Length: 84
Image 1 (cartoon, rainbow, N blue to C red):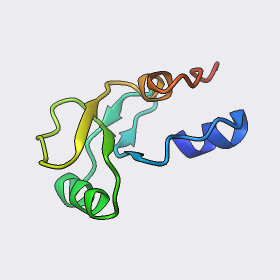
Image 2: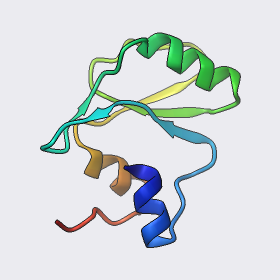
Image 3: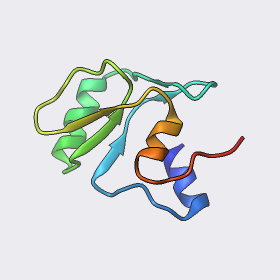
C-alpha cells in the first residue's frame, strides 16, 4: 500500500524506513507471520526505522514506529492520506 501510494503521489517513502504489516479492509495495520524475523532482516539490510503494528516487541538497532492504521504511516512522513 505504501509503495502504491508513493508511485501514484510521486512522493516516495523514505529510503531508510520500511513498513511491515498486513493491512485490513478497514486500514488497520496488523502483525504478519514471522514479524521478528522480518524486522531482523530489515535491520541487516540497513533500514534504520520500521513502521509496525502496535504492540510489536522492540528490536535493538531498529527504531520501531507503532502505527494503528495505514493512514498514519503515510502521514508520518508528510504524505497525504489517500482519499477513498
